[in-house]
Image 1 (cartoon, rainbow, N blue to C red):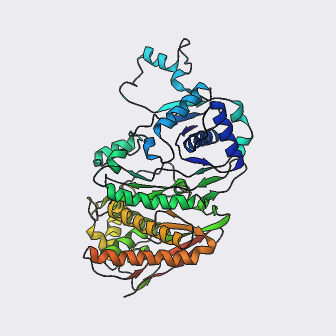
Image 2: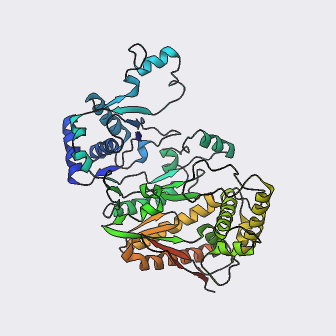
Image 3: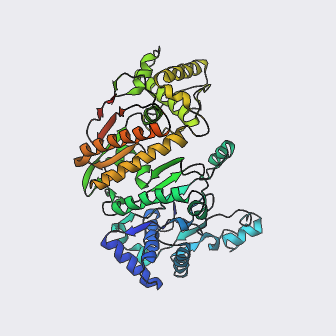
Length: 477
C-alpha cells in the first residue's frame, strides 16, 4: 500500500499528542505548530499504510502529479524537507533509491543506472520512502491515536488544457495540472481568490471545533474531517469551484453513518440539481407544471418505450448528464457503449450499446429532454456547461448556504449539491438551503438580463435507516 504525504493533519486525542511529542523529542525538534503538523501527518501515514509500506513524499514543488507545499497553510516546504531529513537520519524512513536491489548488492538507484532504466534526469518523479520498523511506531498507542484532517489547501486552480490533452492525461492516470501558488495569489485573479479563500478559511476554523467524524470500527480508528479545498477549472476563478474534503470521497451510505458533535447526521440533496439550476439561473421555465418532485419523470412519461421504468429513468439522467457535461445539446449518440468492467455500485448496469436501437433511444431521450428543459438549448462547449457555468454557481450557492448556517450556529458540511447537518437541524437547514437558492437565482437573473422566475426547489432528505423524504418544488409566480 502506498500513502501520499500531505501536511494537513493535527493530533486530536491524548494518544496522538503523546506520540507527536515523543517523536519530536527523539528527532531533536522544537514542538512548534508547523513541526507538530508534519509529525502528525507522518504518523497518520504510518497508521494508514503500516510498517514496510511506502510513502509517496514529493519535494514540495508544484508539478503535474502533486501540489506544492506552499498551498498548505500549516507549514512550509522548507519545514517539511527538514523534518523528512530528520526522519531519514533517525531511520524511520528510507528513500527507495537507497534500498538494496536484486542486482549484485547495488542500490535501486545504482541498478537503474547500470541497466539504463534511470530516467530521473528527464522526468522528475516524487520521491518514495519505505516506512521502517521503529519502537515508537510499533506501540499500541498508534492504533488508538486519532488525527484530524484540518489544514487542506484553501483554493486550487486547474490549468487550462485542450480536450485531446485532457483525454491523454486521463489515459495516463495523471492528475490535472495546477496553476502555481504565485499564478493564483499574485496574478490577475487575486481578488477573486482572496474572496474564495476567505470563505474556506472561515469554514475550516469553524469545522475544527465540530469535526465530521466517521466512527471507528474493529479494524480502523475513527476518521475526523474538518477542512476542504475549493477547486476551480480552466485557469479561472469563475469556472468550477466545488468544495472537496475527505468526506466527499466517501459513498453516501457511509456518510450517513457519520456524526457531528457525536450527533447523527442527515443529507439534504437538491433533486436533479443541474437541469433545475440551469433552468432557474437562465429564467427558463421547465415544462413540469407548477409543482414537481422528480423532473426526470416528465421526460420518461413522454417516451414511448417498453423499457422498465427505473432503467429508463437512468437512461434519461445519463443523456442529460452527457449534454450538460459536454455543453452539447445536439449529441449524435452516447459517450460510451463499452461494457462495464467494474460497476461502481451493485445496481450499475450498461445503459447504451453499439446498436441502432440504442442510438435511436438516445436521440429520442435527447429530443424529449429538450422539450422538458428548454434551457438545455443554451448550452455551449466554451463555458455554458456543467463543469464551467453550472458547477461555479452550484458551488457559490453551497458556499453561501454553509456560511448562512454557520451564522445560525448550525454545523453544515457540503457535498456538491448536498448539505450534511445534524438530524436535529434538518428543518432549519432545508429552509435555509432553499432560501439561499431562491435569493441567489433572483439576484442572478436581472444581473445577466435573464427573465425573472421565482422558484422553490425540490429536495430530498436522507437519514440512515429511514426512507427518503422528498419535498416537492414549485414555481412561486
